[in-house]
Image (cartoon, rainbow, N blue to C red; front, side, top):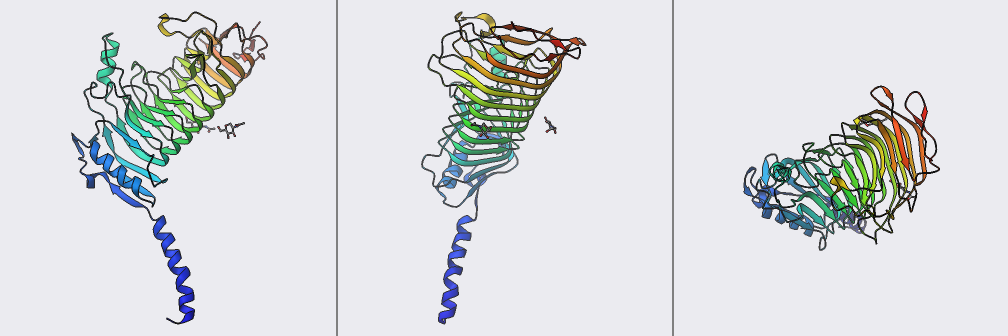
Length: 396
Ligand SMILES: *[C@@H]1O[C@H](CO)[C@@H](O)[C@H](O)[C@H]1NC(C)=O
Ligand SMILES: *[C@@H]1O[C@H](CO)[C@@H](O)[C@H](O)[C@H]1NC(C)=O
């Protein structure tokens, strides 16, 4: 090799090294023994594929082919991963054990913890929750059940085109996570399935939920303490309990909820539309800077509601005054039909009245008449329009 060639070869070798480092490696769960007939437990195959992807320095893809894969319960840890670009591409269905006692006390069916840089594309997660719902609805003593897919203390998560069916408990949960993007997610469970919230977010920042459809028995999206910079856009909810900030004020020492945007959401046959709820007891928590914009209500029982005396079923109600402070909540362009006469209800804390509540272009009807509103401790609420006739909202 003459000196000129050597001069060219060095950058070339360096460049090809970079290319190979960027090349993705694929780990097919079937190469680790996973079975697509849905009868034998493939948990260990999924964990082995994860371990391999995790140990790889190159971007890695875990591939789940078409078929039904029984997974008995798995925790995927990211703490010792060399990799911050793992993709899980799913063409098949992951199936939970049909006996709810198997996962009944485990908290989560599929759990990711301390993971940084994970994308999940496609796939169906079948939580097989119907047996547990029947047990709970019969009033018997039953295990709590498991969340289908839980993320804890994880960052840079992207999920697109995932379907979650019949979760035993919550479908997707993000706890202590930063920068999460969900797109085209589909959640489906019966309208009478207990505690099957679609997406639950808490102690998390920068979560975005786009273009999704959530039909379930509890909240479409529930927003817990410590949630900041949450964005929800183009979502269809129903059946279910609507989009809820709360319930808050469970604890005295509690982080607040701040900077939440909910845009272009349709609520169909839901119990609530946009809701903020807190228990009636002292708390340091708060809610501020919330925008509910462009919502369509179709036969919704409580289209707009702030309930600071939250106590479902009136069992063991704390019966005190809520310490949660609610400030700067804007409702803009909310229209459609209410299933009850009172479409706007603000039941705020006597100790901390709601402030900075604005309604702009709110048009809701009940049986083709302008719907009504009711307010407590929401003085100073900016008057909006209720109903086509322009009935004004009277907050004292
Ligand atoms: C509010 O949240 C959005 C994302 O939902 C983010 O882009 C924006 O920077 C946040 N604003 C503040 C003041 O944190
Ligand atoms: C509103 O959301 C629906 C999906 O729920 C979508 O089809 C529609 O295009 C969205 N509209 C706008 C203006 O983004």
